[in-house]
Length: 405
Image 1 (cartoon, helix red, strand yellow):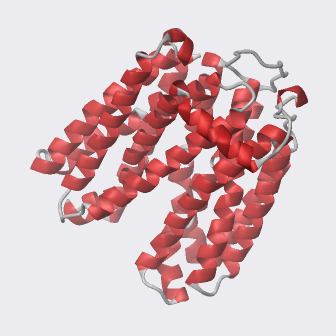
Image 2 (cartoon, one colour):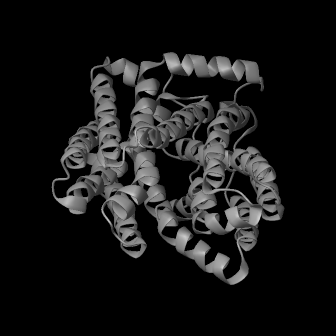
Image 3 (cartoon, helix red, strand yellow):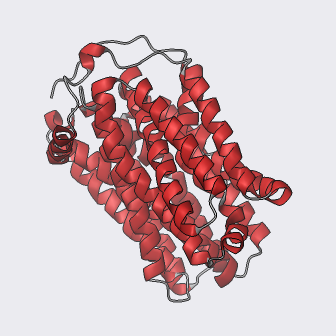
């Protein structure tokens, strides 16, 4: 692959960071915002909690599939237009969710909502690659991820307040407003992909052949797999910790909320640390450091889950440290994969995003399938995620230097 591309004037880093953070946060906000209202939604729609949880799984599926389609579209047509269309679909899906009177319609509208949101998630990453390169791109990715990690702290509490005061349908009305604000913010950014850097024409058949070519690129594949394997642990954390801390270890929901906020603080801190050290150490070295640390803390979590050593603290501490590795793995895995691309940055970002959320689907499923009434399955899945991530970064470091560029 070539390593040069037409230069584009980058906007102010804080302005771009704010807009791109908003776009990238759609995946989190769209789910975290309505989580506290799920019991009320289940009662109103006349279904059990398991059916409502299916709306989360459906959303992840929509994100994964959507990213594979939006990536090549943006490589041919530019970034801003597809993001705008995706935001319109997201707004339409939010309206549909708010008006739903059955679980079937809710699932269908959530799928449309996720498909639209996928454009913002994947193309915001590609826009970082269009505007910045190397360590600067990793720094920008860390800033974005540090900002967007505030969403899991604010969104559930805000959703609970809104649902308590106005009912759960108002949550989706606010998501419509957020979509409109994102559309307005998008208009303040210039188109980052120069016409000369676009693919000659849009053909989805060609696009999926491109994904096949991307998968055969060992550097891109290893970077993407490092992120995907790590996300097995991330969604094991999302799906498994309510049971581990509330039901198994007996903590109150309020105490769990504090632990959740502390974990978000670990993720934010890791991203800020990465933004300080990546320029000096390089993306590959920091990615390998993050993979090794994730493997260590995953193994410690597995030991704590299997033996109950230290009670809830014994499993919380390695989980806290594992989540801190997010800032070392995610920005460098994504920017490392995108750095290999020239004309297909959108497709590479989509490929990484699909593996990322594919890992999330696998992680949440494994926690449920292996559940045995103890914390052991959660710890074992965390160890699997960390060891797999580390193995991938180890392989990446042993590729020929030319294959990593």
